[in-house]
Image (tube, rainbow, N blue to C red; front, side, top):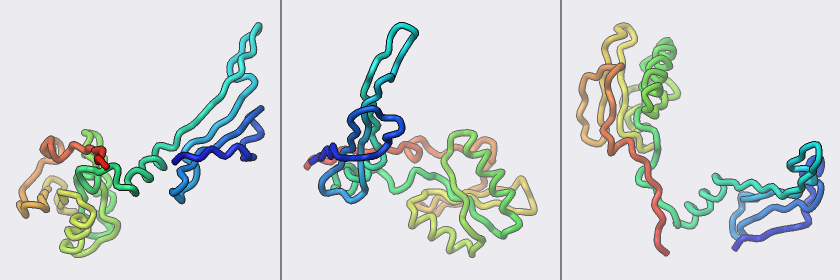
Length: 177
């Protein structure tokens, strides 16, 4: 159920009339929509046109729908590649690799800190990231990718490697109640 509470006092410096916020009654994350009236939403030299503006909190609505199991994602994370971090000195190289992958539309992340590779692989597994990218910090041309699901590890070219299309597709499905 969506509640509209008309006794709100917010945004009074730019609204000139009624102000409102909408909440889901059983959702604790606050307003999912809000807005109000403007006396001069659009105007010209001859006309002043009032209007009502509204914003919808898509992230909050999605949070509500996921919390009620009304939506389901086909995978845990949109990230496809976790770039390993062999040591702290390699962080700039990891950023360069991430930029190259992202420039081709491959969503990736860099492991937060240098850890043993086993820990980095387990971090990718927990987050639902299917690939981990290994690089030799001393040899800029040597790259390997591990498909965590199959365990296969293979050499990869930073400029040309692309994940299979089905790995790239992120879908959200409506669950029938």
